[in-house]
Length: 264
Ligand code: COA
Image 1: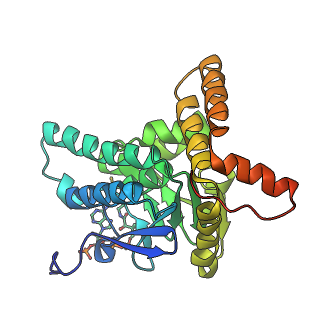
Image 2: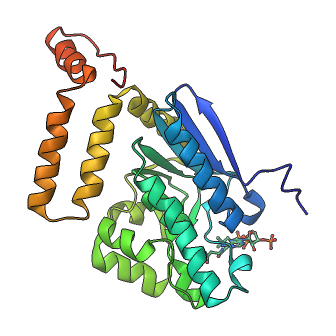
């Protein structure tokens, strides 16, 4: 049996201004138990609070899985009240990721099933290896998604895809996930890390307050009507004119040079 103190459920590493957060239970295909949900929550809170971090990459350890779901062994004995609490625990953590003011990229390196797809869907971009398989197979366990799957998949890919994945429970390959709009890009497995890091580095060099404004507008707009969303966007747009980065970005364009953004 592995010693939990020797192998934490989540690891973090920095590559310049990119924080890489890795779910680290490869012997259980990175299944999300309560300790892993809490460790992810803490890792995201720390990354969001750290001024040196400008973009975040989330992935799973080992060659097979991003995350193969909520931990079925842990769920097996839960009572209804504990089941609800477990769902809320996962939902709170995933909401933190979704509402992160810094962009979060899911590097989907293998199975993203159940809670794994739910975790990928709360990230802002999803880059998948061509070998990845994604799905909401909870129905095969007599369960339904509990970490936001029925809600985020509906908003991301629509009713037909959501009902197909959640009712049939059959995982789909990365190419089909791309067709349905569930992942942004599919890349050869051998290039996944390089291509994902290139995207993350691009985000890390971008204007942090404008990234934050964009994320705020898209999050808010997903939850309100068009008039309110447009008003919110106009207010955020106006706010950008208070930033040094807006002056720098527009001046750099006019001077035909590359901008250097400071996050102020
Ligand atoms: N929860 C807990 N443990 C899990 C898990 C999960 N969601 N998914 C995989 N594991 C464990 C397995 O029990 C096994 O542990 P063991 O070696 O101690 O027996 C280990 O991870 C490796 O998984 P295994 O099933 O042997 O790998 P595989 O390559 O044969 O199959 C999957 C891979 C992803 C198809 C299969 O593991 C699977 O169907 N997992 C569950 C997916 C799921 O239903 N997720 C939604 C949960 S709500």
